[in-house]
Length: 175
Image (cartoon, rainbow, N blue to C red; front, top):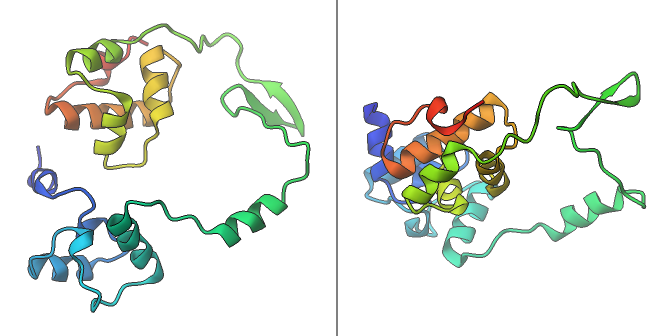
């Protein structure tokens, strides 16, 4: 494992290196002995987004921009419907089923067994992931819903981090 990854594993969650576009500021804080977002003093100048991150870390409450959410929701014309991008693709302005010959539901995958062996839940992988990942991705991985290689790689990296093992995609998926 590269040294940088080993060092990052030693840092607490919600650390100064998680600050949005902080760069040198993160390193200054780290040099001053400030590791966690909740340890950042009020006197440190933060951008609006960084201030939101710090506030979320301090309060444990999610940030919801009510005005922006209301503006976004007003754009919808009811009734609202949606197309599942994994099931349909848009071609010539009409919905055309994607390749029907590709089996999408492949049954329980080896990752499900590995997670049981390590007593892990989907939330454990989402929480430890260093990239954006959802509970739904992990659930689909376990159930055998065909995933993209990118999503498989995210799940693999999180599982390896959680178990401190070095599994491969072949160990997790049988397709």
